[in-house]
Image (tube, rainbow, N blue to C red; front, side, top):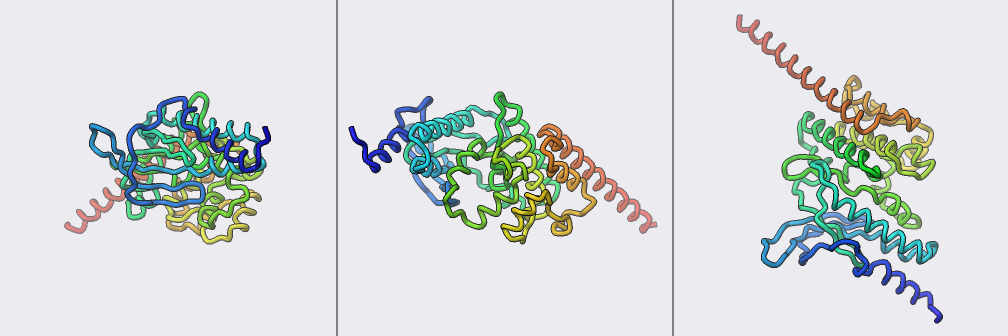
Length: 328
């Protein structure tokens, strides 16, 4: 039998996205769109209602994942490679479903098809950056510690889970005000799908600002590249701007390759003597082996938070004493 080019593409899509090849049950019920919330080149997120017979409707967030379809149409990949990629993505989704931790965003389930969908509980607070816009410093540092706790949980799994796409957009704040990591484990497939695509400047900027020199050099996502990215997260959340804010894309890329880091002066909202800068620079060590583990990072954040609270209490006590002196 001779298979035409279009026939091969159709066969590829049929094999890749067949819902009869699932290893576990897909999400049951019907999803009804309410409002589109976020559009990117490789994904799109909608606010939807999950309808199940005999149950009240539940408000959920549904992410439509486009990159499996992009990879399926890649002429550089063989059919076997495309099938393997599809199966790996599905396994990663199923692994996520099995994870339970207060700082990991719960994945309710998925719908497989030409455009796979993953389904989460709806979080009205959005991501950590938007949520922290008008929040006090203590709330921001607490959320960062929670995010580090979630990262520690991933890194301690067997086999270990590397997030690979850690940035402010991929940390959601739930309705109770807790930070939860999401969109982990799929970075390598997303990176491959991006080759040959025109990515928006904002998406590209956000990705590069969190990228370590070793990741640029090797293309390999590791626990150490996650830690480097967390240093960039600290800067963005506590100063309001990502590293290299205002620097042209290619200049930023070259600076990272040269081992340079963002200037403290460009993020002066976070004081130069803040203990958080010390943590950031430990995360940004050029040698990946010199960066702290996720467990050490969490401990450093807890110590810095305690130091900040003690300073605040001391300041308040001094003001109280001065007030008493004034009364006398």
